[in-house]
Image (cartoon, rainbow, N blue to C red):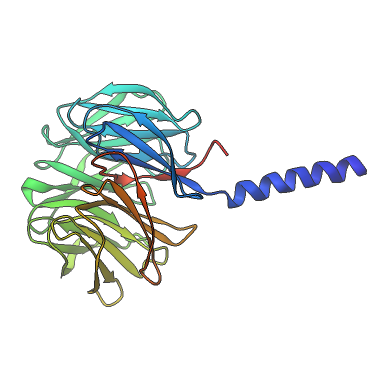
Length: 320
């Protein structure tokens, strides 16, 4: 009985630690050709990982075992081992891989090629390309739905968004966005698609049931990326050329606040464990941690040079 109780408490404490342990943020640094790994418990960079040239996009599997990074200049995808925190493979791919995202089952990595005007599909187990999908001109940001049935990609130079079936990897519909759409993000309930339009400095909102544009909301200059809070009541938009983020009330569909955040903000993620917004400032070489409720800055973290963080960059810590 004594041994049973001892083993039970060891298991319980291990479980408790695992359940409440914090995660990592993987920040692509375009000017230092690296990825900064931030421990979100201590807000400190614990490692710099060398990748390809001019890394931009990032995607992390749900189990944290693989982190994918797009390198537009060296025309390859880097694969980072989440246990070792090492770059284990560089995959040559196309002319300019930029925006990347994983299907919700993590079986496929979707890679938007800026110059080839295609989305390439990589099997995440074999790391082999299985499909090429023609889309619009200069595709960038990608998001996938929870049903694992469709993905959406912003085509900047066509001013459109492609809707693509994950079942057969064929383009099903083309949505007319604002001027120069760059990023897309589905609301947490997957009912609405938000599109950041760089040139028209606004956000287009589409109903995914009928693909009708229901609203266009003005934000700051040159919006780059979008993140939602956990409840989906607020959307946060980085505005590159204004050094701000816009806060959108998603119930009223209005821009309710503009926050000065640092120089040239780009990537943005919501960290649900701490209810924080992480904003990547390219020219400041830092990540700003913002309280998503009171909108106060909690922390600024220095990372590598020229960080982008374009994509979902938060994932589980496997080296606890």
